[in-house]
Length: 229
Length: 182
Image 1: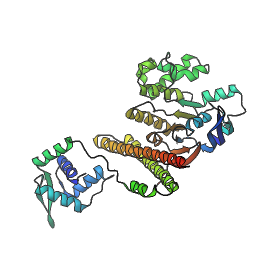
Image 2: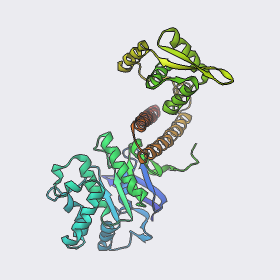
Image 3: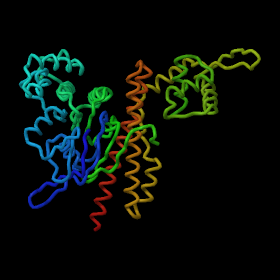
Image 4: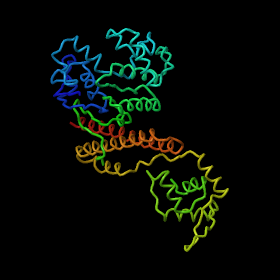
């Protein structure tokens, strides 16, 4: 599904070298809901960006669906990012001038599909996230929780191999956060692979697997099953 | 926390004999609070002496009569007052882990840091189990009982989260102290 092989990332900060990630290797299987947890600066977001092809490792390799994200053209990488990966961000990242329905359909519109074809698919997904009545609203007319629901629908519309979520409820209150997690969990129950990074243990606890990061490397890898004490 | 008010709360819903009282108690709060029959009967005795509970005798074939307990008007008033009063005592800082910390921190920091790591993982697994139970509840029929269970699970999650955050802070402060000494 997604595989990291000795993936590392080193930044230059002036004359200083910062190792954001060191030698990370693991496989994310289809249908997993993986929570990656760690304090700020532990390399969580860097790791997520590598998995989605938003960033390139300085060492090691990343594969999605068995296809490498290295030694490919920018154009191929763009297509993988658009079609195989769905993103959910802390600040929703919706386009303010577009309606909820247009925001949801955006990845398909960018792919050149006509709006007449995109519209019913976007409408169906908005219905699934409980926002049928909000299709014609723009982001500024929506609450935080509603905006994140739109973002989830947008992430799902291409039928991605994986959804990558970066602190998806970092900006929401506890009750709204729970509704967002229940929604993500319901898509995971239908087989959607999800990887989420968070510093919030309550959020991480929704995962079927939790990896904790420490100083740029995986520390604990907790797979949730019946055998936990 | 007092067993007394839990008994009054259960009897406020309906009259019960001792065995049913225990079952009802276990069903409602048994996940985090366990009682034996001895505690239940001694509490009922005290409640009767204070006039908050009374009982009727129910005849049984070939067996001694059994007592059906009932809350009195005074008992109801006591319960209502208790329910309306906020809890002033904050969770005690006296769990086993704190004691370990007291005795470990003076010596070598490595075992403390290792212990903190293990403790955090344990809490995380606990939180995951609680979350699984919440998800299962959400798929169930719902209703008032389910809501109460869910709120108690939430309380468990928030407490565990606070503990994890505190442990993370401990870790950072202990490491900073080590670096300062170097």
